[in-house]
Image (cartoon, rainbow, N blue to C red; front, side):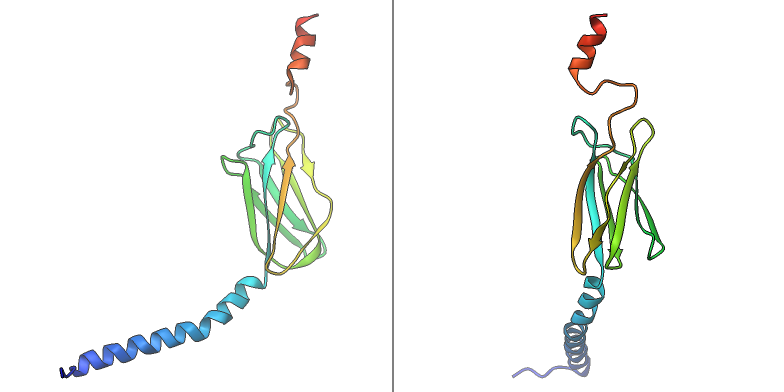
Length: 138
């Protein structure tokens, strides 16, 4: 039978203690993360195309919370780590698009509220071929 050196014994002991420490503290980290909720969504224009670079504001006046996010190239936004409460609203704005706002909603612990909304159609631009046909007929 092979004997282990003092260094090898110490390394095994430290590794075992580290594993035990990680297992014991994991629930505390999980509780910290799940103590919040989140809001995510996709901002679409009138033709259901994603709107990149839109300003999305998640706010709750009773909490004094005002979080600004920007949509990705795919029109997606995420507002993580929100305090669970009622009274949240989301507003979306971008130059060239009509503003959009949600009604009040509630954020729950450990849940993500998924929204899909529009930034409205571009101002001064037709959103359907029907409008173009009328313009041509004049």
